[in-house]
Every structure is written in structure tokens, then in C-alpha cells.
Image (cartoon, rainbow, N blue to C red; front, side, top):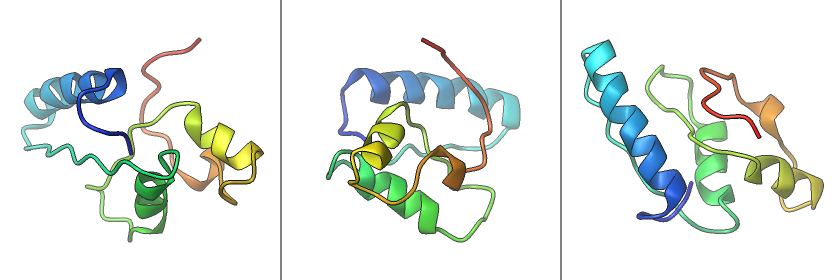
Length: 86
């Protein structure tokens, strides 16, 4: 849910390249910037579970929830992988 070219975008595109090799499937990253990343995160949260729609995010989901920007947090998503921890 971030604009193209930032650190998060670069990181997730690299991960997608390695995941493609491992899964044997094409992964098409889509940037959906806007509203403190809530445009993209809400899109994924509201999407029908299809096994193909994945959200790559970080603490901004929790920040948006705790500041009242959105009414959901990490618990609205099923985790697939933890890439980093700070």
C-alpha cells in the first residue's frame, strides 16, 4: 500500500522475485498509495480470499488503527511470513 520507489516497495519487489522462483508463479506487485497506506491495506482486507492477493506492509497498519484512521489492525489479516523485526 505504498508509493513506488520507496524502501518498502524495493524490499517487497525483491522478495517477490525470489518467491516467484520458489513458487513457479508470476507475482505482480501493485502499488496502491494513499491515505497513510490505508487505500491498499483496506483493498486487501476487503478482497475475497483467493490465495493470490497479498499485503506487504509494516507498522503503519498498527499506527493507522491506534490513531483511529482505520477500524482494523494486523488481526484483520492472516500472516504469511515475517520478514523483519525491529
